Length: 439
Image 1 (cartoon, one colour):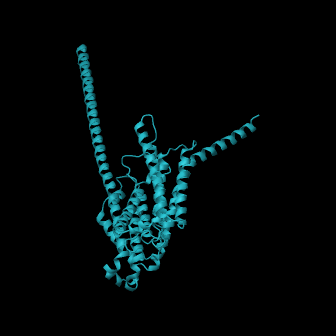
Image 2: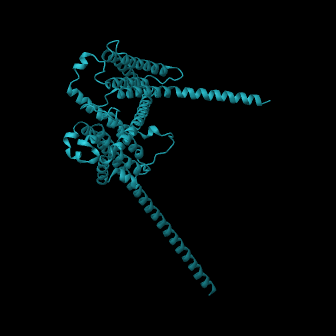
Image 3: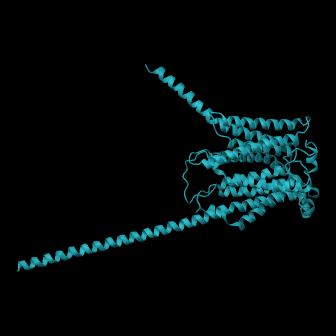
């Protein structure tokens, strides 16, 4: 009897252990199924986010072209108010602050009012997007979309300056000179950084012999173009000994060209000829622009050039200048990486593709810059139709811009050597101190 009871108990225990094992196996299987489901859901979630980030990135990149088009339209509106606004927009004559026959809302003051409206619009965009870091933020949606709301803000921004007193607009004009100078500085830094990047890309390498050959060819072409440009400037803008100012501008440009070439080839610098060749072409171009900006009455040019300065060439040059302004603002605005002091930051998938705050800052300064070009940096300027950036002030601004560009580039070449020498001197002094202290 007792043996029967023991067998039954043993059988029950075995059944209980079997049931526990079965339940544990089932629970483990359920856990694995749950983990698999979670993994699938996580992968699906990440893929969905990746798609959302890609769409957001495309919208953000597309938005910068829309802002560029807005900036281009503002340039044409400023030109229209300067050259044709007084006759084409008679209703503005009735605005009180515009004065008699609307004189204070056209010509130079008209340009400044349009520029101020453009500045207000991009300043609003700057304030509302400056802290944007991620694509999922609401500020990113505001930058890349909601164009109906932005259109209303743009129209209000453009209308407001035409109700400001002329004295306030004049004050803005004085401030715009400083803003335009800052814009030129940012543009110079962006251009020099691009030249540096291009030089590194074509740097000689054992694994990139084809690149090395192409880089050598490009550096030769740029230097040949620079020398030809110097010869052209001498023959076209300094044909007589009486053209002393132009002779000085061209000769100093040639000296800067030779200095950049010599420093680049110095054994301690050894930066190669490509970057200095590109920079040489750039400063020759700036010198040419400076002499093109000289007033027609004082311009020292050959007779053939004076005869060839027909109306259609003037119009084409004017249109090219406007598009150059827009391209300069656009290329500098999207180049925020050139102005970062630290390159250690790791980029993530949900980061915005460019700095919105810097982008709108450059365009707001660009609004000041195009105003200065249309009025030739003179607040009382009465420019002739289809002209842009003509006058002695404009010429000197371009010359100083050229000299400043060459100075920045030369300092960029020699600064590593100067820093290295300082480190060596400091290291030697420290070693002498240690030796004097040690017994």
